[in-house]
Amino acid sequence: MTIRYIYWQEDDMLLGYLEEFPDYWTQGESLEDLQEHLKDLYNDLTSGEIPNVRRIAELEVG
Image (cartoon, rainbow, N blue to C red; front, side, top):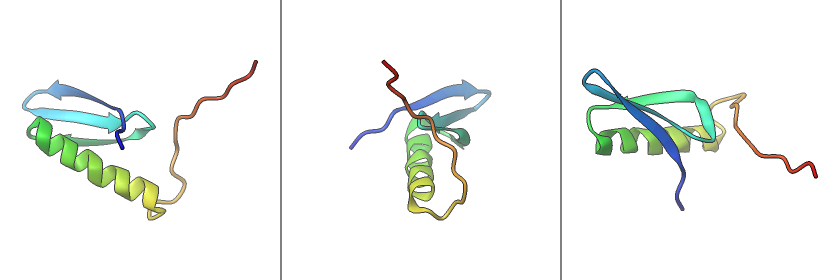
């Protein structure tokens, strides 16, 4: 399974978030570190441990 994420460099850190969950950001010292944090974040957000998680979804209307 793959999931999309957005990331950028800010000073000496990489910041990023999962495309499906744009309200929840994380950071890492390297791309590999950021990806590990994003995996942990994904597990936390999809496990039900965090209440009231906001997501992005698509709706077909026509």
